[in-house]
Image (cartoon, rainbow over all chains, first blue to last red; front, top):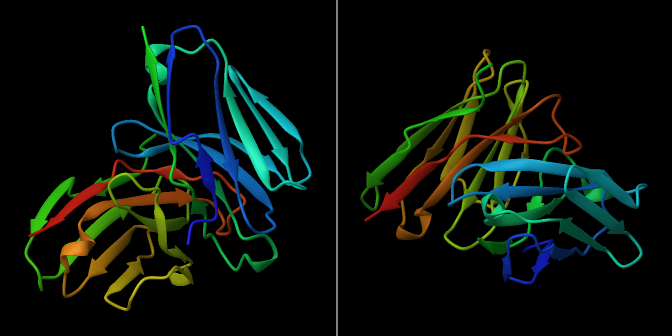
Length: 114
Length: 114
């Protein structure tokens, strides 16, 4: 079963606008990661936030983590057409983590129109 | 610095056949994870190899097996192919096993089972 659930499933915005994607998960975690995927090919790591962190920035990306609500959000500021892609959150299994298993959500499909 | 490479990029098989997919990790990485991604879904963890052993396994039948070689490259084997095995198979490499490091993904092998 899926650990992470992304919301919305699809998002369409204009260039220059901000895009916000949300992720919810079910169990305790050690960290949460966000990945990007273009056209069904390989995923690219964007950012990792650990369970004891609340916010992290990387360029135009801002990630928040609320472990009490078991949720995270990814904000992309000043979006560009090149940001068009699918975005996935991925979590480990916290205390149940026996190895390297990451559990991915179903993703948010972002479309940025020029 | 070569990233994660997978071969072949595309493959067409018929039901009941067997398939072998190959992966070379990013230079310096010693851990390989395999994921299956059905169309419109997030990647699903198959298993992870570290120090030539299967470290953790997802909810996949025994028809899915793997191997890691001393040079850290890896193979994924699927026997008795079913139509439902049609998917994008992604290989990801990391360092040191576990789920606390970001993954570097290859571009995937698109498997079609007819």
